[in-house]
Length: 113
Length: 113
Image (cartoon, rainbow over all chains, first blue to last red):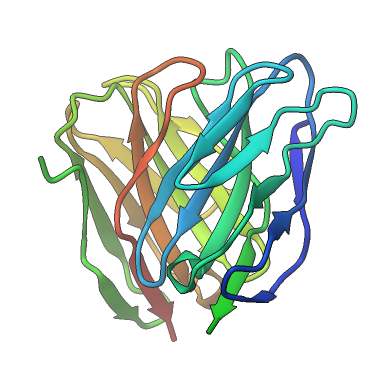
């Protein structure tokens, strides 16, 4: 079956630090990969996605590259801001699954001044 | 556009009581989903509806029922609430098909005493 494994949090960084949140997956076939972000008290919203191997998704300074050889989709940002404090979820979607998503457990990021 | 709306935002129930969580979307999406979010577990799919008139079980359907009332609305019912159903519930919708982003509502925080 499908599964997504994320690094455990919380991750605490100072503003302007470099961020990496690891995500690896197990899936049959060729899934699409997503990062969703959840700000305090809100629902999830799509941050970025990649639909095939070697694709790079990017948005708001965040990037992630779909690495089929290592089954990974790590999230990176060169310089985090306090406003990036949130919970980040990695997810995958397999073809023919009615667009269902399989989520990781989420990683809480706290950015301090 | 309101996107995905959910009611109520908060609810406290006693064990054995019943309730219905309401969800509506105004984006003309075919697919709708109900998830629950628990600490350390990420989001888990309860039920989904790939199109009006169809519903299917997800990962954790026990203790829940759903109704796809029309294309816009997808409700989740707890017939006899249990403390194990204390959670935050999210509704989402999407265009049916691979690669498509899911749009989430703001969530309902449910406590069962």
